[in-house]
Structures are given as C-alpha cells and as structure tokens.
Image (tube, rainbow, N blue to C red; front, top):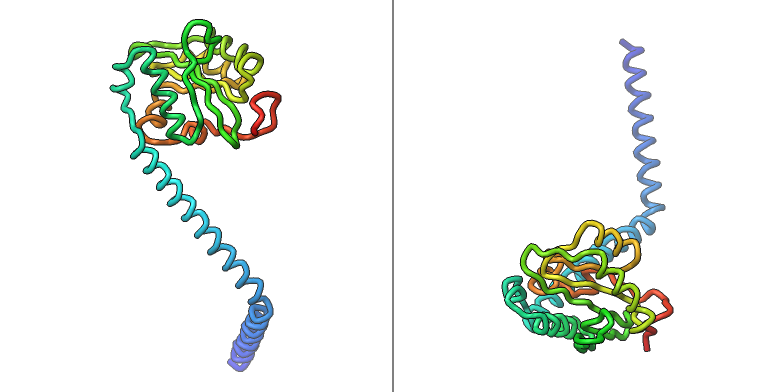
Length: 208
C-alpha cells in the first residue's frame, strides 16, 4: 500500500513538473505563436477579400453584358464574331473584329496592357457541330507570325473533336467549347481567367 502511494506521488510530481515546463515553454514561445496566429488570420482575411472582390467583378461584368447559349446559337457568323469582341471589351480588353475574307484565321483581335495580344477564331456552328484539328493548325500557323499575338484561341458554340483538343493543348492553342463559352458569356467569368492566360515573356504580342 505504501509502495503504491509512493508511485502515485512520484507520477503526480512528474506530471506537475511537465505542466510547469510546458507552461514555461509557452510563455517563452508566445511571441512566435502570436505571430503565426496573426499571419494565419491575415491569410484567411486576404483570401476572403479576394473571393469577395472576384464575385464583385463577375457581377459587374454580368451587369455590362450577359449572353445566353440560346442567343449565341441564334446568331449568324458575323454577329457571333461581334459578340466575341463585345465580351472581350466587357472583360477589359481593347478589341476589334477583323473577320472576313483574308482574315488569316483571326476573327477578333484583343489587346491587354498586362496580357498582351490575343487572336480569336470564331466558329459558329449548329448545336452539336464539332470543330476539327485543321482549324487549330491554321490558327497556330498565323497567330504569332502574322498577327504577332501571344495567345491563340478558337471559340465555338459547338464542341471540338478529341484530336483537336489534344493538339491545341500540346501546341498552346486554347479552345473554348460550348461549356466554356457559357461560363464566359453567361456566367461572367473573364476569358483570361477562364483560360488562365498569363503575361509570360514571348516573342509576339509585346505588352506596351
């Protein structure tokens, strides 16, 4: 019985020492812990502010222009190209329609002070229509050498063949199919955000 009491007392003393040591360590480390807490709080606040700002920008874009898939389907080729130009302007680009004879695979050209120049080849088709690889080849061949663009994009209200999408991804020709077009035109996501366009250095499309 006495032995058991001694063991209990020893354990209690050891536990008390551990508590005292832990408390002392916390007292010494509190500035570091406080700094981490402040940084964590600031990061959470920054992310929340960014999310709120992104939502506000999207709402502002939608208030400026919102085009549904049905409206896009009802357009002719020229109106579809004009819609692409208007959507770029909504997103903060200077844009002009250049489609027509001799357009050399560019229907719309956009300029951005940070992201450079892009060209859009617009392919208006019937619902369910598919765009093949040939269009991707043509856009790739003229976007930089002819139009001096950093970003080449093909947009359709239909879909792309699997080969076209794979080729575009390998050779940096962005594609916007019906699903992505809806996110751009109707949901208000800016095209450069949707495609992740960056201002990486390049031979063409130098930013002023």
